[in-house]
Structures are given as C-alpha cells and as structure tokens.
Length: 122
Image (cartoon, rainbow, N blue to C red):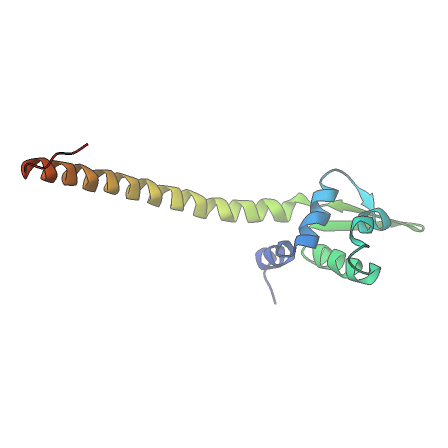
C-alpha cells in the first residue's frame, strides 16, 4: 500500500498529468475539454487512464451530473507535497549557507597565506 505522498509524487512524475493539473488550475473542466489538448498524441482511453491516476492520488475530483463529468483540482495533496519539500529546502539552504561561510573562511586564509610568502594577489 502506497502512502499519500508517494501517490502524489508518482502522479506528478508524468508531464501529461502535470499539464492536466495546470489546465485544471485555471478552473473546473469536463472530461472532454480536459482531454482535447492531448488527443493529437494519445487516445481517449490513455487520457482517461492519466485522469484516473490523478483521481487515485486525490489531486483531482470528478463529479457526475447526468452526461456531464466535471473535474476540478484538489489542492490538499499538493500542499502536503509542498510542505514536505519545504522541510528539505530549508535544511539545504542552511547547509549551503554554512558551506558559503566555510568557503569564504578558506579563501580568506589563502589570501593571507599568499601575502605572507611575498606573492602578489589581485
């Protein structure tokens, strides 16, 4: 059984699904309208499979009103993924800041060392 975060990242791994989400970020759409941009390169059943992956990951919800099937984006899984990524971004930034300070320290020592040996520095 996959956890929700893994399902979200697996769904986001495909460019077609990301394009579908981008389209839905502009507003609700029915399945036919959502499929139109992709029908040049793939069949309707293939588009439907991509949509099912998004639904299973909770990124898209679909409603049915007679013949009309409306899709809309569910931002909660995206927020959860963003929060998870943010934890690592903050840790990496902190690590890069420490590395930057260390490099400045090393460069300062090298400049001092070069001057003490009578070398000219620019």
